[in-house]
Image (cartoon, rainbow, N blue to C red):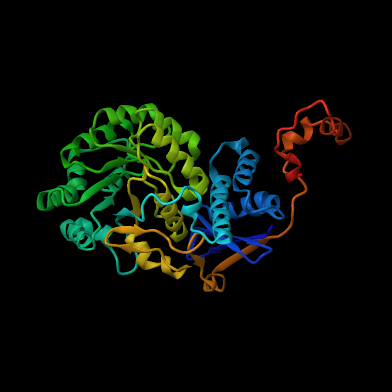
Length: 419
């Protein structure tokens, strides 16, 4: 089996969303996705990685991940290249699972559970306007979630009041106004529902300290990104002033950035986004690092339906997954327009996928949409060498002296695979 082509699909309705389909010569197709700056990701896939992978064995997932990462990390290990790697990685795992007739979670470690608790990030889409309604009737919003078995919710009460000063100035009356929905839920429902606070990195450190102190008595599930995760020492200072766990963060890329927050006291909960930080392969590694420090992970969602399916596999195979993010407004509003079968939320739990591979497919109708942009790479690159390699390697006629030397020990890694 070889990779025959790589296909990307974007739709104008959601301009930041991009689906990736990796096709094989046996007819199997793997599905991945990522979110944000989709046209840039599209270029990374077709100009950079597609020609590298076409003609290769889709089962060699770790080899492909390392080669793509090393080829693109000269400008830092973030950005469009890593989002592209993330989507391709998920698609390759999907192919492997389908070929072996097993769900991905059975391949990456086997099941540790058959369902995982979810919390609902309040959203707005179609008839669901809970992110708006929470300001006028927060108790009703919380009760509606509890009636469905969802015992946790996340909101962003301080985002709006940060706008005027870009998070640099915080007035007490503004803060009191912003925190009113949380206080009302606690007054009427007590601790029946867990509440997480997401601030999207909008505050400076002194104001973030004020916010967490103000909310200390509310006994929140966690504080997420009150400050941007650019400095783990600043997060350590923030964590030191509150007993509420600090969660960090979907903006951290790969095991290398997450490691610093895990190994220090900067965060008690790691929140990798599978479609940004390196795919299934990398989130599994991040979880292992966290487990060595007896810390949980809580995967990030709110990007698209494929991420939710992929995270289900991570959650089923990984003991230290704490809880899974879920956006009811997007799931019931538009996720089902793109994939089939849908993932299952039952009684406040995300259930284990049951079909081979990822367990879902892109609906044929997506590519037929009038607002769809489809691009395909089917050509093969001559070499994986970077521009640096090209001028630091000896001339080809001299390379054979090294390759054919009987005095050297071979490593077992065949670099010529990508040449």
